[in-house]
Image 1 (cartoon, rainbow, N blue to C red):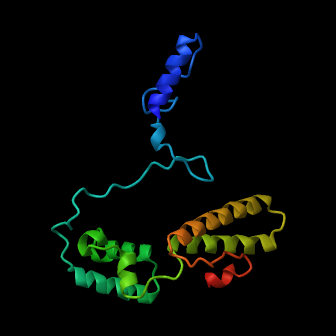
Image 2 (cartoon, rainbow, N blue to C red):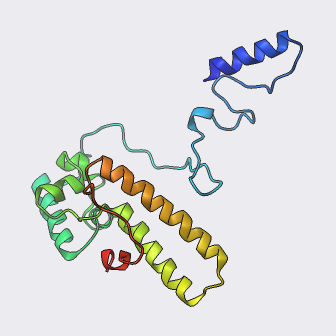
Length: 188
């Protein structure tokens, strides 16, 4: 906490020592506040760029689709095999629905769950497993590729961490386990 940093600085200065200069709520470099500097798990980036949602939670006046029509389109696209994020992109680009949650009052995945069309695996976990399967396939052909082997370890540790979260969140059964030998069947 910033207050602790200031107290530590005062204690050091009174004892004759010097402490790194910190501004309240800022890191030593002064670029990013310390409480916002959550970095990537396996990379140097801080990842601060993001889009901002509108403050108003109501749909814009120019959206002409009714909530029931949006729900029907979501179900239709899910039956075609699209993932929830692909459904959102299609609705945005083809039908002019900026935020499904603003129009319908519930998110795409919740709509899919109520209609029994939700995917068995959460989307982010599914794509991590898919990436790990393709990396293993690459490593079977290129056994000396040490960097890929290291990256596979990182991806699989992310899979285990995400699976632990989803088990705690009850999105996955408690007995679910990632096994690399059978992983290709999960993403087939």
